[in-house]
Image (cartoon, rainbow, N blue to C red; front, side):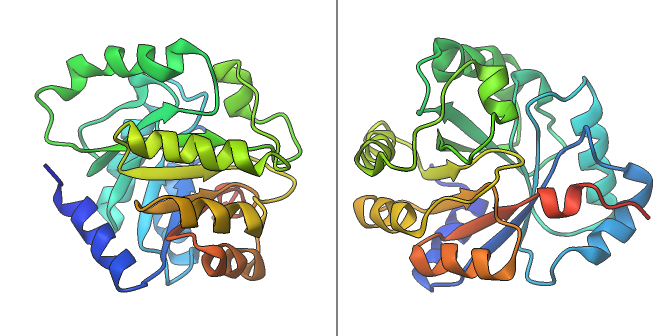
Length: 234
């Protein structure tokens, strides 16, 4: 059954209303500056994503709690580990790392999360997560012990995205990784968007308005930005 937030996303896609999510890494987030941080992010922000690859126990929940107190934007969990899940958020992106072959991130972490999720009110959205080379050794690669797909291998990226859709994913998330030196090429975004018929999220290495607009124009339904804002101090 499709939940309220996913239906809202589908409506935005149908109406060609582009979405912008700001990704907040709890490990780097200054909770004391939550209000100032929220005043700094773009007015066009539609979602807050909370998550990171290496987050200590309790940090995600504290960040979500602080954001909830100051913002009405929907909060989506983007967890690097099942221990990062908190019921205080609105939505959980239930990630499958399709670009890797590490069983722990294809099914292991998902099984470990079930005890927290089976009686939870969190809206759960199955998400095919594809890590693409952004020119650096991302924290996702290090933690998951997987290699990103080369940006030159467009056919592999497209086929991976389509496999995710056929497996039942409701979203495809193309990610160049935290601190990427360059974002995902427009051609890749365009080819993936043409191949799938579910919403497409694109993130990693997007730091400027021009890069954001390029992703939108190429077919991204939602752009995720993070690094440009995560070091903000009051």
